[in-house]
Image (cartoon, rainbow over all chains, first blue to last red; front, side, top):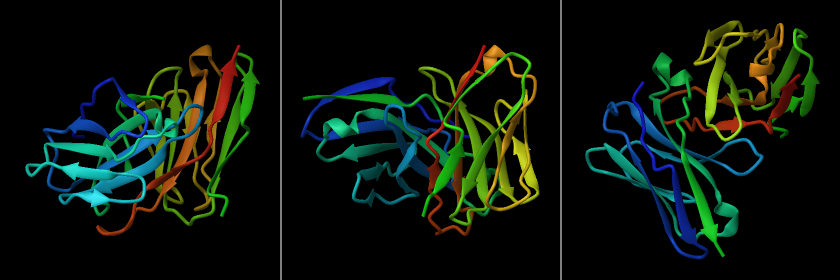
Length: 114
Length: 116
């Protein structure tokens, strides 16, 4: 399985944008880039995913490099509730059997300063 | 919809005891997963299932067993509990469909297990 590399921790100020990077230099053409986050004492929750084009939803934006070897999760205006561990995960095209696994790395622990 | 429901929320086991962690989902998802998360660490995949009657090992399957007799339920069995199995266990489900389907995974709230 292709691996992802994320910084162990990041800090940001409340109400400012946050850019969380993820490197995935061995990504394959059929890998989707998924982001999940885990709030304290809770199960992970889905944030966003994409394949090649940048994606936006109500929670965040996902910027994918043209060569797909890296991506950035963007929180446009961080709140204290966004303090969590953010995981960048590669998932294969659901048509392939390997897509059934979701393997988590160590993630980035995001702290938000009031 | 209830989503993914895990029971119990907390449990203390003695070494050598066995138990079953229950997981049920009401979203008609074909894929289901079990993870464990040790304190301060990331999630490790124990077992997963792509549909009723089909299960496969994940990263850390030793000491656990699973079964998937229905689409809705995916119980995790611990035989001969050991202190190393003290952890928080998360169950998740997702749809594994075509290329353009939304395959986000939904997680339960976890079962906190202590083996003493």
